[in-house]
Picture 1 (cartoon, rainbow, N blue to C red):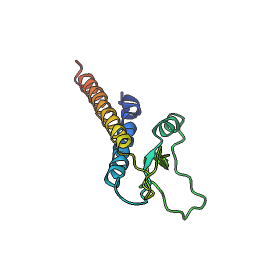
Picture 2 (picture 1 turned 135 degrees about the horizontal axis):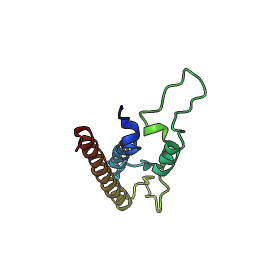
Picture 3 (picture 1 turned 90 degrees about the vertical axis):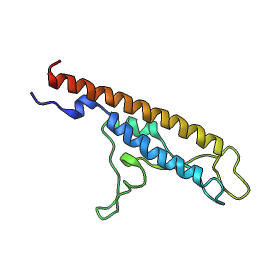
Picture 4 (picture 1 turned 90 degrees about the horizontal axis):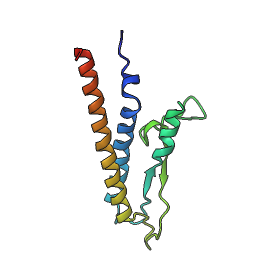
Length: 131
């Protein structure tokens, strides 16, 4: 009987990829906190996971020759602009405290997903050994 890793691991690998990509976006926001005119961006993680659960994660293009936006955000997710609470006079919308909080939360979620994934692999290893 063959083991299906897709079924065994569930959506944990996709979540790990999304958290990794989101870390990059949030780090970019933090790095550009003093850049005039920079607009903070983020991934709407919940909508991407909801679409993944519904099997609807696909990039949409209007013509076959269009370039894929897969490098912009994972799984067809859109990079959205963060709505600023109080934008600075130079047009920068990065709120360092918000970005640091989001980055920290994302890092905790990434680490916990790694822990769950490690547990899945440990269980599969035991099942393969017959223990």
